[in-house]
Length: 138
Image 1 (cartoon, rainbow, N blue to C red):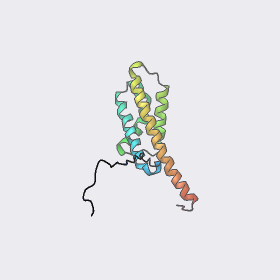
Image 2: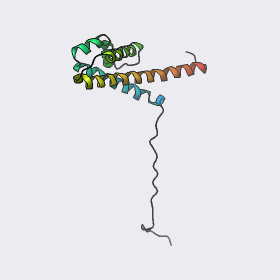
Image 3: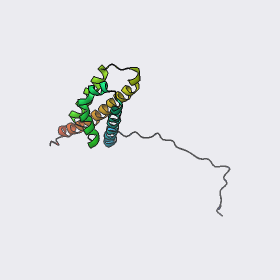
Image 4: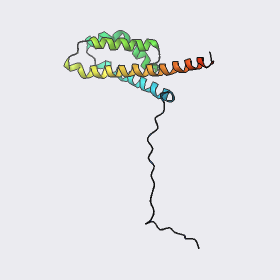
């Protein structure tokens, strides 16, 4: 005779916790690039609140940033050079207490946008170089 019910007082559960698997950066190229666009957008939006003397320091490379944000294209050398120019200009600027928070936000967003753009470009260049080394020239 087989039982049709099982006692529940003598049972236990086994729970297995697994940490979230971190995907390698190469598998996350689109995510990293989208984060670069978001950081560039944050930086561009912050420039609207800059006082005129600070705005004048970054006015020329700002056009490149504006175009990159509008087209969502953040992997060109011109874009990275423009971000570098903006960061250097802002680092050399005299910042008052009133502009300190905005300056920090802008520099952080610019630095993030530059670092993320460089990361994607580095990964793509590595893939191309590895392919070339393996004989997949093209």
